[in-house]
Length: 123
Image 1: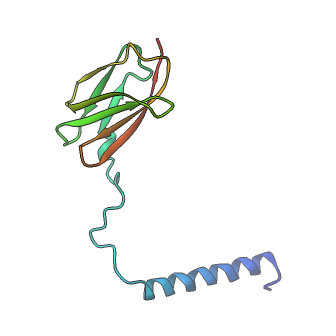
Image 2 (image 1 turned 135 degrees about the vertical axis):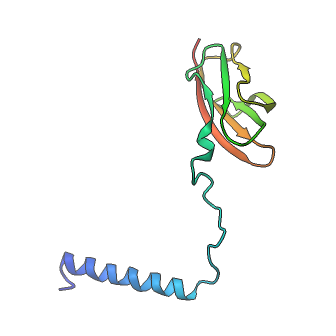
């Protein structure tokens, strides 16, 4: 039966089950208080920039528990074109001098990146 497709699948499923059991038994440590997943509860989905596409300005919205954040805007080549610190909910960013195109906005709290937002500017 191992020469058939179904036999090969059965053999592979058995190998995976055996391998996972071996890893569980032989790998040290556990995942107690492991916080590798940053966006478990969609916490950072409450941070944004609008409108998108933007014409003359972007409005920063922050409905999270983080009081102030920093934003750095990069053009398509990776060059930093705007940096603002200590933004609060409702802060406005002037993009009227930006060329039409796609920009990446890095939102951070000073210690870590909270979110990266892609924004289009069209005049």
